[in-house]
Length: 330
Image (cartoon, rainbow, N blue to C red; front, top):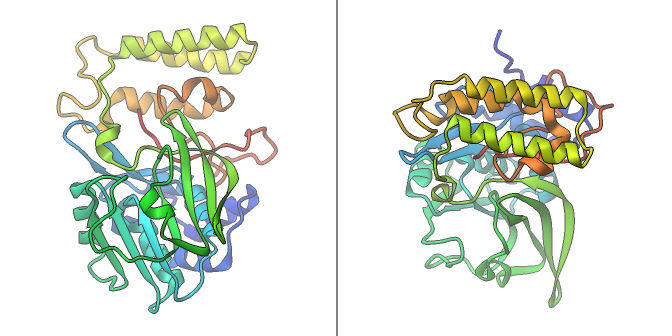
């Protein structure tokens, strides 16, 4: 039976320690995530991100895992009538949730550097009159004829800094939520204007893919190369005494499975195999919960969603290192 019960998912998130405000809960129950992707939504109800577009060059963009969506909406401190700017499409799902929360007197302006992502969003939000979407020339370049004063800004992909054209427009008391860092990992930062100062609050480590789907189109890696890389990572973890027997066995099994894949298997992004269906990606995805503690060593290679407080088998008593992993990317 498909696990697509939103109230049950939200209860699991709360049990896992995630704050789920009532207005966020109501919005997530009202908006159907399957309206924003043609991919299987069942993983979403196991607290995992799900794809919404895939490029011919192998880039994938996802709708964030539920625990991350709830976390973002909680920290945005939204109220009716607000205008919110979102940089990064997320399939249009987060924009729809925010539109519900801010109501008919509010407005949501969604920006994304990808024409493909914006076309997807526009096709899914045809009946959402308070949401507008447009293509950005680049993350660091201000769009033409864009409103001057901003109160709430949400960036849903990795950036190294808050673009100046956004920070300069945030009004006193307004703020941006931004995953600041490099592709290996970021910290979710609340950057708030107080008078003439911009004050930053660290809300914790996260792992987002880049805003622009083109930046996720990395070079291909065959199964043996990935297995070699995992072996090196495992050796390093053993030298640092940061791996236990169960984790080591899980990595060894994964490495063995990768080496059993056909030698002529096209790398991810090639050969006509959808990225989400590629055997290498599926093996990594299935094995990812077994090495949560090793994530700092592995996140240079890929970003599976390892912290899943909304998953059915989530154990709130386990040591989860307070990581909020969002994106699955190579």
